[in-house]
Image (cartoon, rainbow, N blue to C red; front, side, top):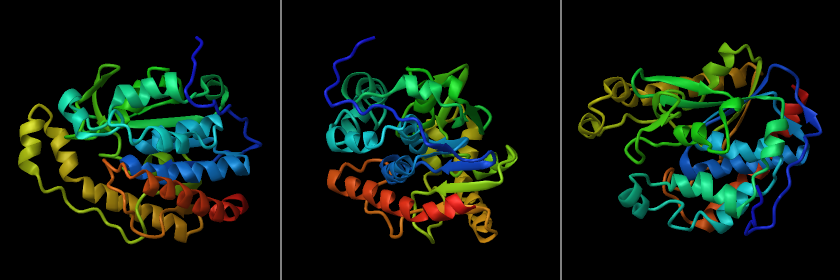
Amino acid sequence: MTHNYKQTPIPGKVPEKVLPKGYALILEGGGTRGFYSAGVFDAFTDAGIMFPYIAGVSAGAANALSYITGQKGRNRQIVEKYVGNPKYVSKRNLLLHRSLFGMEFVFHEVPQKHIFFDWDMFSKQDITFLTGALDCDTGKTVWFNKGDITQSLDAVMASCSVPLLSPVFKFKGYNLLDGGIADPIPIEKSISDHNTFHVIVLTRNKGYQKNIFKQKNILKIMYKKYPKLIDVILNRHNIYNRQLAVCEQLEKEGKAVIIRPLKPLQVNESAGRNIEKLLELHDEGYDEGKEKLPLILKA
């Protein structure tokens, strides 16, 4: 299929080096906070490295797509050209489509018409890429592999479907929402898959702890069909803080490198549209990812 893309295409790039088996890249989500991670990925692309195993949820998984293809700068170009478009994120989307993020625009129109996504390079990369989404019926994370990600990007869209801000997403017989609900930092999944060294990209600064979700009554109204979903949302602060503690313990033991913002972000996790701040966030991620490369490569 031929497309006339509005931006000059950034071709995919084969990595110079795939890191050894047992290395894992673990990605937190966070809506537009995920553009910090996108900057980290560009530093990895410049260094020519690829991870044999990547596990991500929500925006972490979405932004990792361009890292896997080696399209440095593609996510930054999306910030510059399209995040300010109300089709990308707006209350208007919420009113018209029941989703704050314009899923059709973000996952179909942008990669198919505006900013080239190199599907050929994505297909060629021989790595494990896992995208998590929450099964609303069981309250458990369902993991989709790289082969499940087609040009419809349904698996990634499901992972990015934020509770209360997006409708339940139906895919492969599941009723799904944001993968960051039950596995906000998928470190335990990586450990269970026998990885031994983890590079963990977070989108919150050191010292952050998640607080309890207080709008229980809204959940009971919105998700009365999914009691296990309600339970896991109400327990999410415990899950997040536990997984964060696991990551920090691994770092102390020399089994992990954590890359995260050095200061609290000035970007709302779901609706940030300040382009200048988002570009600064991306570039901060690039600098901090580059700074951690020696620790990653000597492990």
